[in-house]
Amino acid sequence: MATYEHSGTNKETHKAHRCGGGHWSAANIASMVLGFIIFAPLGFVILVWSILGNPVQELPGWIRAQWGRVVRGGKVKTVNGEENEVFNEYQQTQHDRISEIKEEIRKRAEAFRDFKANAQRRKDQQEFDDFMANKPENGA
Image 1 (tube, rainbow, N blue to C red):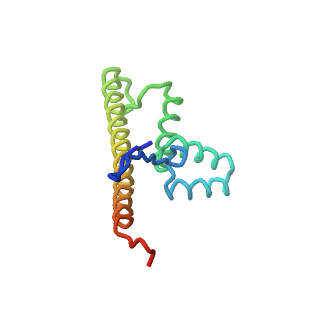
Image 2 (cartoon, rainbow, N blue to C red):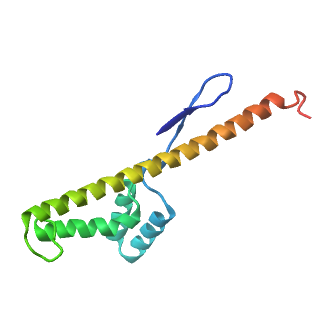
Image 3 (cartoon, rainbow, N blue to C red):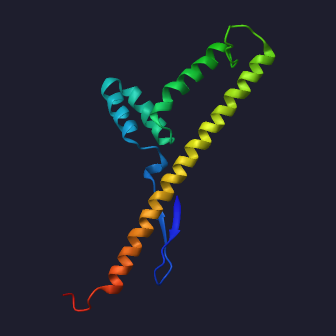
């Protein structure tokens, strides 16, 4: 939840709310509607995924990763199928690092969206304050 102040005579704090904290992009909503039309449990999966704040584009990759962990018993599959423990650890470390980077990028994008929304709100508040300060008293 973002907070910011406007530069009016009395300081007020405005809070910007995101709809349930989820990720409600057009792609997520369209996918959810199609999921409910095609197969209701699929729609529920997409709904929960969106509520958790994830873009629907990441859902197939997450499902593949989870399925792979179940099939491999938590081990990372090597390129040539060999069971080299050191290489597997290296590969898992790289995978984890990339996942962390993706999460950081997602958080930065969300922070930037919040910043833009707050900047627009501050601009609108300043325009309104200017209007109220310069309006004729008799309403004409």
